[in-house]
Length: 474
Ligand SMILES: [Zn+2]
Image (tube, rainbow, N blue to C red):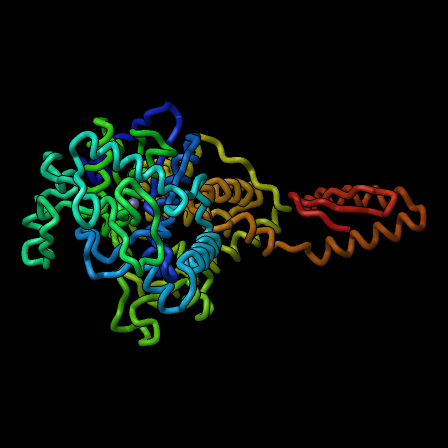
């Protein structure tokens, strides 16, 4: 995998054999997530699914920022207001009402996209003591100082601050950018760990430095280390987190523990909207519901995202989404037909199967989902044109690949392959035969249903029941 910290491809070596412990920066829940955010979580989902495909057990933590995300974290006294507080004031409700609403919406969107739920989803507001403890540790070690408006991390005490993930020092990167002068800070790039509350702050907590609220960066360090330990395998996020967020996380975590923070870093590149062609109503900010409103299946967006590398980003256009939807529809049709033709009996793939080998090689090569889709396309070809044995093998391969692709291939196959009319007719005929005590005929029909349609029939005291690949009926 490509490691953003080493800026090169590295073979992944876990800290614990066969395990991936990973932290993915979660959303600040003050509004709907746009499809660009969701694209980034899709990439993290592919990473986790890939590791699980190769037999790893995973521990996946993703935070919810429901407090303390100022527009400008470089200055505790900044005039920019907390994003959540802005929404809460606009709607005249408690900040946690805002946070809860958009957290739920976020998880609904994830579910529609088949993004697996993280194992642990810590909320910032429920981890204030862990953040305070980490800040105290930094002060005790001389890496942080208390100022009039809050507590700051002293970047001069962490050599190479800002350059662990970014090739150039912050000064060159931010040249020309407006950096507010704050006389309370010792160095330009010092960042707030804790902000003293102003009376009007909606969210504030007690601390050794008076009432206040935490900086955004300290949240992620405190919560990742609480659940994954001081050193863990993989930290991921969007390319917008490269600076300052992740550089701050590294500085404060490693300064506090004296140990490496994350062994690997991964950053997803942006989704770019073809803004000239987007409708004005979305204002370049598009949600999953905007896609659904146009009649698209959320999984078409997932398929579209898989067609490109997370390191290149995605150029989103309606035309490309349309093409993905057509591709998904075609796949579903082929899979449904093959499922019906084979009575829903897929053959488990063999390790040495060519398509399976090529698929595994693709996803093991820095999660190359575009190449992986080419293998799925090859299996679709076999499912469409092969004989029954070939179809069964192709289905087995597709179900296996779907553990990573997450396109609900098995579910759509079952849906598409409802009981054929002929099978329904035979079931009815058998019911009649039993009523007429014609057991010879009823046994023939039972064998027929199994051989031709993969349907198992059982007789119960309430009459006959059938079962087919997990689906049941009477
Ligand atoms: Zn974070």
